[in-house]
Image (cartoon, rainbow, N blue to C red; front, side, top):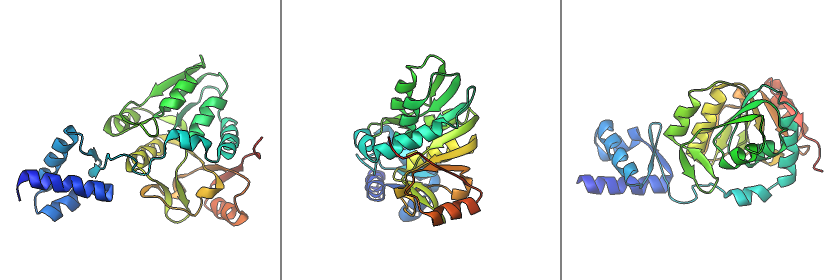
Length: 256
């Protein structure tokens, strides 16, 4: 098979599956993994895909990413209540991470102007926090996802590797008590996993509709979470199972 033909088929496979590993491509095309890595490097430079840890992901529009405008109005009241409950766990002097979820943006809006360091991959959260003089804001930088107005990719991951924080506040698309946390977008999932790894305390902010669901890309086991902040519609059995795993559960006040 000609090199150009192989690379064309690689792009087709990546777009079809949304993500694929180097090892799998090596077997499909009967070439070395080093050859595949060179192919992926070339294709990334041509903006035909994006490399990730051990493979590549599609850059075709969507990939399950919902636009921030749509996310802002989805379960907005619950997200606002959850964010206010999250803010009550933040103390002056904390060093925290806010992910690119809408709930994290609500946290940025609700945060009082107090001495804090906030690391985020969200453009919207950074803009909101820029209005508060005492809060130091660090943006990860990286490759921009226009749908969510967030940074992802190798540069964002390297940026996170430079820091250690007290707390991370994140959300996700699916929370399964056996299969763990998941998200639609692999690049977001990789970044959220790293955010959890550099934080002392991992706080998950999700409305009750997320429990029992799974999305495309795995983030981490539920055991990696220290605290869940959710709404009052969560069922008692789920609360019990979370607490049995030594996960603190905070029920947000009902929406205003």
